[in-house]
Image 1 (cartoon, rainbow, N blue to C red):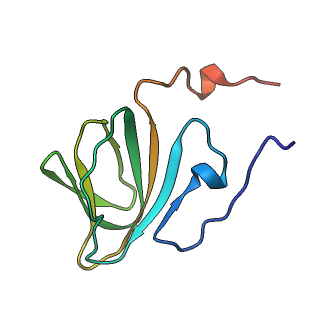
Image 2: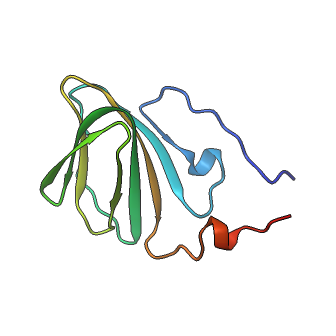
Length: 117
């Protein structure tokens, strides 16, 4: 059995990697919205914080009623309880990665968790 899994992400509007990569500690999704479109719902989480990385384009995130302008290169960490919704700008599509992990679950960082051979 191999110690790695590889997949290729196409140009779907949303790709969740938990099944494609057999993830056991995080949920990762790649998301694209066309210009002027938005996620059709507001949501929060019970236990999981989300980390959003804007890969291309621009738009806005509404977080607990605050409007946050987002553009390629921006990263956001949003606590589980925060209500959030994402929108592409009227003149630009947006592509972003969402990483979802249980809040306060990180036991060590690379330097502390790595085994050097």
